[in-house]
Length: 584
Image (cartoon, rainbow, N blue to C red):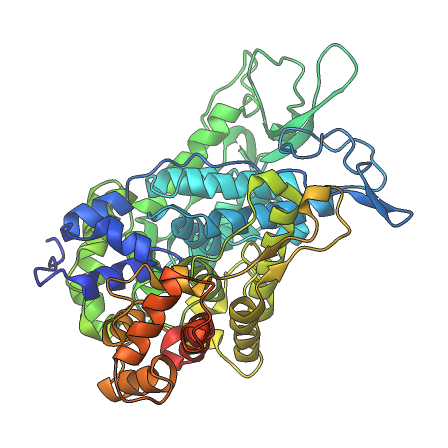
């Protein structure tokens, strides 16, 4: 039975709640885009997007004699993408520079997000299938992030299959060295414990299930070289084994590492037997033999057939769909999954997800239009992640960002923003371990872990620096045009996005609605108005006259009007320091 759909009023409060959770922050442009649309129309728009994104670029050089010169990553021209160029015998090795470029690129996609779910879903899947860039090459990490984006609305079967054979995951969880001589249980454990089944109340996989799954994953690896009749030609990583006749010299012997023979009778395929939780499922390699009755060596297709059977076995359990819905619930709604929520929301939505062949887009449509999502208890009840805190502030206040015309300054700015996230506890492409960020799983604190005595001062430093000073590019750049640029917030331009910025009551009301994740009392609004807009005066026209005078003539000599930009800056500094600004 479908979960109950939200049938109440869908006004600005509901729209704000939806956009705060489905975007990295909401701004006035987002509100205007969706104004007057129905709930279904907004959610449909949020779920319809292209997964095509730009590629990370080379915006790095090397310092010689106190001057930046383009002698690093020599096979990639400055300002072009490096993702299709392998690193071959370079000293110094530019992979660390590429990794920094990759993180800056990812930050840029978040900062420049369109009004849809693409980038926040990419982060969701990165957290769900967590890997660490510092342990993987830049190229592998880029491909995995691209995969998360390409598959963010795909069926969970495709998502799970693709990540299982992903180069980064093969490397990160030791799959690339998993062999029949010593089956490695790392990925076999995590795919059940974290990725597909979880540790929910009805999870029942066993240690023996892990051991048998490990044998299914033996023999998968990758190569970074292409072999043909000429000397080895550098190429991009490729999955092994490869039985493509177009590349007959492809290195394939690792398929012999697959656990397919019965140790007691090498002429028979080994049966991987699973527990009653999986309905006593048996998976084995095909009994295909040669003229002498010997089992044929596995190929990509026969190994993939075993893998498909295993993934189908996972998806056939009720607990798989429930685990996924719980993960979405914790990420987008709240961590407090009560028995009532489990029974009335998790289980029915999961049942539909499973019945619909794990159609993620269809499930999310039901998720974001459900009555549960708009429950008043869930509004303003989550602490913003560092990613949301940072991106929402820059998007809300419309801070001007470096463009592609000044690529060095653009990537330097993004790296600076990324580093603020690290200081707040979230490296946007580097969750701390395979379980992801603790804020999405650690009982009992969950998202409340984002705020502590170490991270809150970092939030304060960030918003004060952005609102007071902005960011200035340095002078030691390869590109002269990227040097000495300053990027700040125009507070007057920001206020023009509200309906009546010259009316102090409307300006305060709409500012609070946009910036505060939870409502504040009228007395708080009155205090903000009097302390800042009215400068302790008693009449509203004090602000109205000053604002209109300044907008009409920014060079005005009127002593009150001249203070308008400073008044607005001080107002929003105060508001960004409020507890409510940290909520969504």
